[in-house]
Image (cartoon, rainbow, N blue to C red):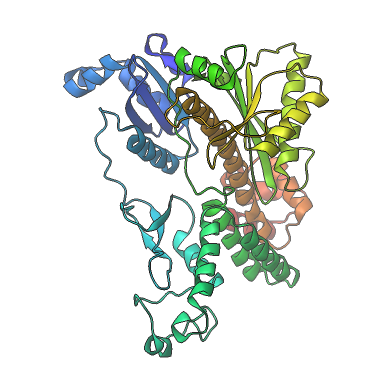
Length: 484
């Protein structure tokens, strides 16, 4: 959070993202997106004749009391985030967005006799289940695969019958369970739909494992094109649905909370000291891959982004969120002990009793001074405290709970942004796996020499052959063709 009086362009990254303006009451009055945050925000604070000539813009600028930015990976993500925040806060200076049709959503009507996947670009206020929007990946192709994988129907009739079955090829090639012909009961069919929705919500471990087995089998049999097909599909599913048990979305920008929220939280938890410095942890991983964690810090109810930290999990080599939480808490607070910085007033973890116990165990093992700690479980917003069996349940409108939710959501956003960054880098590097003659050791050699696939793309065939020992012009040409 920054005051407009202390505006300095150097504080703002030259990256795509979203910016938020607030008035003196801390209310969000404008949300905008930019391909270059520094250039865009400078437009407001280094006023030109054009900005002063527009009454609406002049009024907005005069109302700004503080501002904050949220960099993202690309313009697609900034568009999604901007749209969500405008719908959540309805800032008075924003014109209603009319770009809901930009990205695909997946819609399932559970009131149908035999529900199926439908693609749409508009989320309506009806009783259908919607998943998305999905700005990345081959959503249509992946939806078709999931329809076949769960053997759901893809036909057009609302209630297919025997006549439709006679003209359908899907069941003949075993892509459909054929409920229209009575080959599966409605209850059995709905179980398949429920399993599909778990994948759409992010629980795609079973599908991912099966695809990985198919990919490895094809690779061992030297069917490289088939292996590449399974790999691309695997990447798509992880990219589109892969955030652990969460559909694609961004956490909200936290409100600007003040002393009242901090005092309300102190009273709600029954702790001696005001929790002016809150540090919160979240874990993000997909099937144990690229396991990462985040730590965000709020000071006096506001995000202190300079104190944020992110971690690669080092010591845990299986899917164990509790062990990962234990590791990260120990690493972070061991460092604070060594630097004699015991300034945290409240420690928070994303999760329930298990995550709380793991974090507490980590603190005890390093002999960190007793500090208030809690776990916030998202399902019912239950607050778990040490040595207390029953969770604390706060009123949904209480300032204390809103502050905790904002901290938790920010920790989640920061964790998944790091996870997405690592996963995107790994997917890009996997291009080299398609090239016959490039093994793991040579792949590492290429990446060390050029630094990234992006730098490799900019190099000529001759430069590739010259800089990597053992690679002739023919193999260099194949590398250039695949990466170019």
